[in-house]
Length: 382
Ligand code: ATP
Ligand code: MG
Image (cartoon, rainbow, N blue to C red; front, side):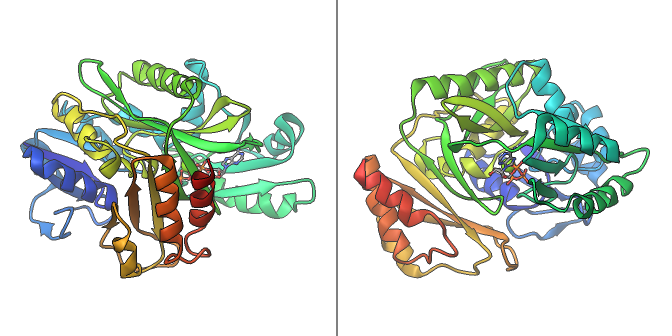
């Protein structure tokens, strides 16, 4: 079976790796260069998008920022999952907030901003401190500002108004101002829904961000209440969208109550641990869903962690000497801060996971791999 993936980055690459044993052949469409390519070698395939759409059995996407005409062409084929509407919602925070409101899933209070007076309204309600986010085009903490009581609001507004002005009638730009949430931790849930409405949901993952970018995910025993809240949110959202594929939801945990930060209509960085931590990874389950195959097991084999490799061209080879550690490279050119790959580690117990993280931290400098030593020590002391 041939599956066309919109996007040619690491998520398409990992789908390709997960698809091969299932006899699912992945072809990527690179939206920037408008070329079809092999997701592993990036060799260009001499085919038009229209031809690829006609020849494939299913279409999916690895990211949200896809031109409308491409989404429409995929949509009319009747093979596109999770489909145009879901991708549009995931790519626009204002649509995302509207969906959360409609499904009564809690999220951070916010104001939509399209002109200067709206910013003043937001400063009054929900009030400072605020996290300001562009509704379109943001990722990895980009397109964000923080406004605190001593911030230079005019300076921030001038950057915001540049973004608003860059929109067009066909593709208007907007911004949301969100209450800065004093969360205890960030968690996410990843799940898949098939074409018949069956779901398979992974255990909730704890995530650490540094400078707005995910640096570390840990999957371990989680309270039933938190898992239930996350699954309730998942079920409401996928039912409303009649969703097919993997959906990721990021939450803030505030005193044991989950509040959605954002959703991603695709496989997600905080689910990379499932490659070794479960029998059926998020990549495989996504492909199974869009290809019309039964979903696979989402139970945790053992406590697991994922460490992002950000901006590093390689890692010390000793990392691979720590038992049950794997590395996953994305084959990308090095740039500071760029997601270059990740390291997965799985263990039989939380204590052992902690020991392995401590062992890894000896080879991974704190400034490049924040939190590894601390999380390792915490887990060994539990
Ligand atoms: P990514 O694509 O990596 O998920 P993003 O650009 O979509 O990032 P967000 O997930 O919205 O951005 O924000 C990045 C991080 O900034 C969050 O994980 C969280 O740590 C922090 N953050 C965002 N919104 C808020 C908020 N309202 N209150 C407190 N912290 C926030
Ligand atoms: Mg995020």
